[in-house]
Amino acid sequence: MTLQIPFDNTYARLPSNFYSKLTAEVVSAPSMIAYNFPLAKELGITGENDQDIIEIFSGNKVALGSDPLAQLYAGHQFGQYNPQLGDGRALLLGETIKADGVRYDIQLKGSGPTPYSRSGDGRAWLGPVLREYLVSEAMHALGIPTTRALAVILSGEPVMRENLLPGAILTRVASSHIRIGTFQVFSARRDWTSLKILLEYAINRHFPSADGPLGFLQEVIKAQAALIPKWMGVGFIHGVMNTDNCQIAGETIDYGPCAFMDRFHPMRVYSSIDKMGRYAYGSQPDIIVWNLAQLATALVPLMPDKDKAIEAFTNAINDMPRIVKKNWLKVFAKKIGISSIQLGDEDLITKLLNLMADGHADFTNTFSTLGSSSTRDQFMEPKKFDIWEKEWQIRISTEKDPIIHMKQANPVLIPRNHRIEEMISAALKEDYVPFKRLQRALSSPFAQNAAFSDLRRPPLETEEIKATFCGT
Ligand code: AMP
Ligand code: MG
Image (tube, rainbow, N blue to C red):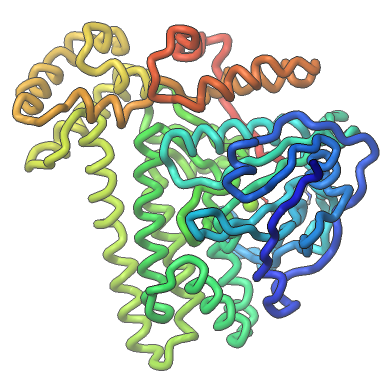
């Protein structure tokens, strides 16, 4: 049966300065590597014709109802404002509405150059595409708001990086691709008409009960202040928290140089381009506040009374660290079995994290084994952990069902960097067994499945990945 996508596009009807309409560049020999049938079903896509899947999600064929476009945005990259970024290698095919009434974007990534490509080739290679497919779907299974992955298509054409590599196209699904940088581009251009239209659109789509620019800002603050502590709770380091990679509905977006931490250290950095550690694990709660301050700055001109607006927006931003902290405490309390937070709990959590950093403990395995006899083996000096454990046992003795809470909060499996690299190396030899296996394992990250126990093992020194790279 032919593939049908029930497109219902709204972004394509916004003013023409919001995007550039164009079709994807045709590729010569596309083939399908992965297709997410459950997600396709949720999006209302019917039909299972492989040839249609390949043609539509390679960009070779424009599906009925699709109105492809590349979105304009700007953004602060490592603190420096770049007045024009935009989809340099992505194309929004259109939107569909899920059964729950939520509208989703379907976007190709790696589909060829656009007017926003600058010096880039508009392409992606297979490695980062498979990485994003696995990691974003793993994040979803971990219960963390994220963009999803619908398909991976090999283009059949090489792309030039350090050497020639197989080109691929990822189909990404998101509740929208509106970023802080989408507001910044119009605000910096002093195009108040477009800024206002964008705000109305974003409010309608994401936060229909928000009242004006301030109400909207508060909703974005709430969404992002909920997201970042969830990252922290699974040891996730985004790696490139630029304002163009900060989606306003609070979904994790842009899986370039991201990484899950093995051994815990609060200032762990993996990204090869993050030389100063701006986006280190422990800096993420501060950076998100900085990013929201940029959104506030972009929105101020829409307020009738500038002085009052600046005061109200400043108060909202100044209050954000408190919200982030509150959510962080909730996440980490649950990880150690506490659901009713008391005075002293933060101290107990901090003590454990300090012991983990000093003791080179594996983040995931320390939490997932907590309460068993093997946790102490994670630490270089187990006796120090024993002291903490006694204090913790006393604390949770008054909690209801601590073990159940911990099992829900502490994944057994995460996409470990060395496993991802191993999977990519195999894929380059046209062996997709590791990809499929990781996909299956990570779809149930909280399950104790003996068949996947090898994936729980931290990397040996020789296997350890010290740096991750952007997906360009
Ligand atoms: P990112 O680091 O993925 O957030 O990308 C930052 C900007 O660079 C965005 O505007 C991307 O569209 C653009 N970009 C990244 N890779 C490429 C590429 N291969 N070709 C063209 N533009 C790219
Ligand atoms: Mg990006």
